[in-house]
Image (cartoon, rainbow, N blue to C red; front, side, top):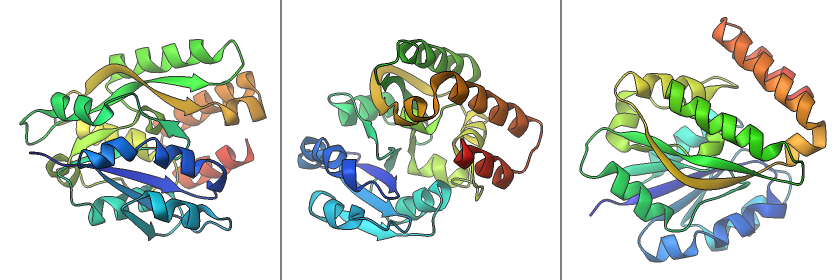
Length: 227
């Protein structure tokens, strides 16, 4: 039997980390391992996560570094990287293990739905899912899962400040197309609504275009933080 390890990078997620982890309780009962990797929170993220996770680790700030630290500590042979503000579909562990099967090296992701009140959020999610199917590139919001063997062969997440999910997807895609599950992971639309849907959409397209043209991910991360 394969074991799934769920790795959640977190930074100042005290307000929602308990809800995210509580939703994983049944998966833990079925044998899944849940690891939270904190990047230096100044709130109660760690204290709220500890009773609801198998392990809570500390790592340098940055999703790539945090997720690599979680992968190194994980005991499962299938890894799922989950954002702290996202909720998995029902039976996500069974869906992932069925999609992976007995393959030594395979990977995939879920479709995504963006939670929020703005009427454009479902449209944005539809385009994200469609683009992912066409390009074979997954974003972190889509809950990327991968066998440990393939993750190691691809070198893990590259140590960059932004677009680490795109870079890893490129490395994984070179070894095989992703399994694109139509069940939806629900992610928070808080950033979209806080900064404005149109503004955020334009920013993400500019950042992605700049990355494809070879821009420094550290510079792109600073632009992303400014919104």
